Amino acid sequence: MFRPRNEQGTSRLGRRVSSRPRSRRHEVKIGIIGAGAIGGTLTRRLAALGHEVRVSNSREPETLSELAAETGATAVRNTEAAQDADLVIVSIPQKNTPDLPSNIVESAKPGAPIIETNNYYPQQRDGLIADIEDGKAESVWVAEHLGSRSDDVVKVFNGIYWKHLLQKGVSAGTAGRIALPIAGADGPGKKLVFDIVDQLGFDPVDGGTLAESWRQQPGTPVYGKDYDAEGVAKALTEATNERTEEWRA
Image 1 (cartoon, one colour):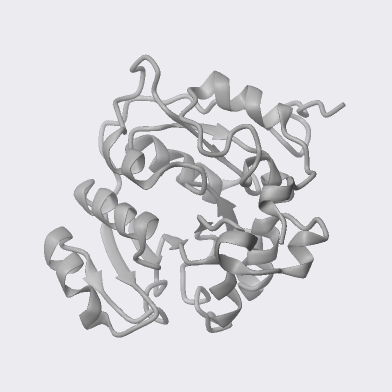
Image 2 (spheres, one colour; image 1 turned 45 degrees about the vertical axis):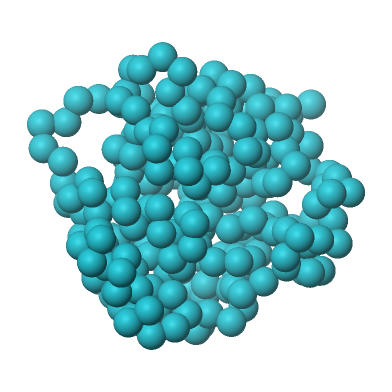
């Protein structure tokens, strides 16, 4: 039976990250690769919070001129989005991950977290990816395609409906506040991601290491649910790493 490790262990699965008042919000330089439902929503929300946002897709920046005009974000080529960024977000279809330039996140600041929001939808979109079918965590597979920055990869935003991400963020302490699991290595990068999630209006809950990110993949108890922090922590511990028929090729 899985048991979350304690503060001295390598995982803090299910730990709720408390939100403390801030005297001054630090502006973060954010590069977003992918401008679909989640990437576009994060562009809108993060720019509205006052962060400096650079957004890209697989085409020319001009194709994002309306989003840029709406939000104040800067549209760039995908190879430019991560340049000198404090935080990078990769939000593209899982099957397109191997097509990314091998150095696409290399220009981010040292230690900058690389959020990946992807999900593997074998029947619905992506086709068969053998390593994932054989048991590799989806986010570990993504991290392996991001070269030397693989240790900076953090999984979050993959299980929330984009309209809820856009509309349902509320102040810390609000009853029923939606919580989001965050999986990745402990350290300053993960702490920054906790803070960003809180700023967006959601309770951050530690989802453990990236190797444990299968606990929030499609088909798990937490996926697609708007649980509060207690519910997310419980759902993470109830997850199993066996893929159900719906989520197999």
